[in-house]
Length: 492
Image (cartoon, rainbow, N blue to C red; front, side, top):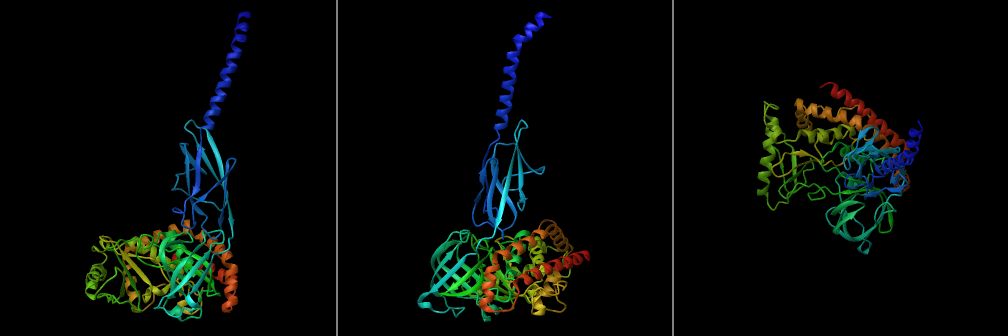
């Protein structure tokens, strides 16, 4: 027994050092988890004007982001951890989406099972909206849709966006909107430039939103389109506008619809077409089967003979839709039904009846590709306005008319295909589950962001609208449209 006790005394220091070594080893294993980068990329999160690097404080990360941006964000992170979890769900850098309306905890797990928890907390802040100032040469008023005036432009980004200054040309734009007191404008910068975080381009649009009492009918439509993945859905940024020293109101700055690397990226041999009953472009055709008024926006043509091959290509797929055995033919080889289902769902949600005419209805086609609907454009007369002359009325009104309007006949025909109905129902179900609740938050946040601008606009144009009430009406209208779409797909 004495020998055993003596041996134990001899071993105690060894056991102590082994224990210490083991503790140090465990500590080293725990410290091996490293996070060398954590940020939100503007390329993956279009609502962000630039990359947002998260500030590190201890084991937590923070940032301040604008309230009118989406709370659903994709994080980019670099780590030697073998697994990353949020609420038990596997995370992948540059892929996984999380809701950052509340604090999000990431668990970084090492190869040997050690774990490091970090919290990401976003402070959602109301920023002042940018102010665009344009001064024409000699202070000349912009009075034409045809003739550009030379001007200088400066944009105060209000600490949210990079300031900009340069030279531009400016003219009026729009069809019915140009006749209204508050004018929309087209800008052509002297050189391609990145503006308010949007990719470089020369051509830009200032939408006046004079008819729109919420100042966000177009913006909400584009937001729905981006969430659905409608091709080339625009970014819209609210701005205040001053021209030649006179405040002109609350506007939206957005991209001009055109073919280009940072716009409708369909290549030099692609088509960009617009169906519109104004039918006022130089190169155009009336389709044979449905008498659709098709205007050729791209490519740039030099003579009427170049219209023929584009008309032939369009009528090839249109003829298959008209054919008596539709949809049991090859029309899907020429037409992207998924792009159509997402595109038309935006019109259903916003009650935009322009497709019945049709007006401002865009299609595009890459060389060797299918005809696809998009980009989205022109929601001034949506949300019940076309029927009642007042926005946010009659939310359960069917999108398609009764009668023989050209667009009505064509689009109703597409919905005779069970595959189109199935795609539409699928995208609606997915949107309702993943985005609809967040859309109401987006509307509230956007309204808070432009509240002061809307008040200044009302003081300028005296339309007699209560902005807060109109925002609530918009949300109620969308709720009504959701109920209408539910009943619509139930009948499939």
